[in-house]
Image 1 (cartoon, rainbow, N blue to C red):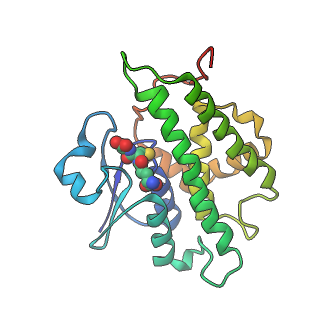
Image 2 (spheres, helix red, strand yellow; image 1 turned 135 degrees about the horizontal axis):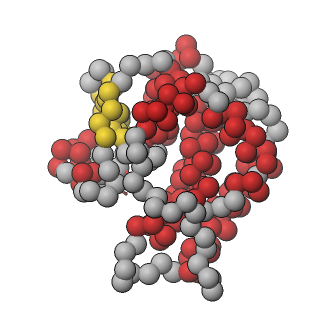
Length: 219
Ligand SMILES: N[C@@H](CCC(=O)N[C@@H](CS)C(=O)NCC(=O)O)C(=O)O
């Protein structure tokens, strides 16, 4: 039995997309980031910080999206979605796995400031400006390195799933047209049937209320 604990449009979408790429059957337990369900004792027993994704896989319980992605790729090596130890591309793949969380943490902090803070609390305009600049710099660095169809020279891999999830979400904070190579890359990824199946199961997101969150005036 495989069960994914999932919040629509959260990092658990990475795992959902990978499960689709692997062609595995899985159940989905849906949660909302807003209703307290991630803080229930039952969920905290699965995920110590009360975060998604969690994957129950054949009796094991895994949390942290990067670890889950790596474990899945290594459990199903025949899919060829992560270079094995000894393969020269493995270093690049693991770098991208971690870099995706550099981007993920910037998005998370922008979300805290610009989406989740409720009045009378106010975001710091200066902090938002810095976070936004750091996000743009992180994406620009990947844009500069993008010299093929996918992040690894050998082709599509789980590294693309890890990184592209954050690139898609960055549209709430930055103009993605600033990154033409990443945009062309993203169009290639969006066309993948597995991505489309994952989006069909993702569910209705209740994280973002606006289409775009600009840096506040006066920052
Ligand atoms: N590094 C962790 C981060 C997980 C994480 O923060 N997930 C968010 C959704 S994207 C979450 O569950 N947040 C709930 C909360 O912070 O209360 C991972 O990659 O799995």
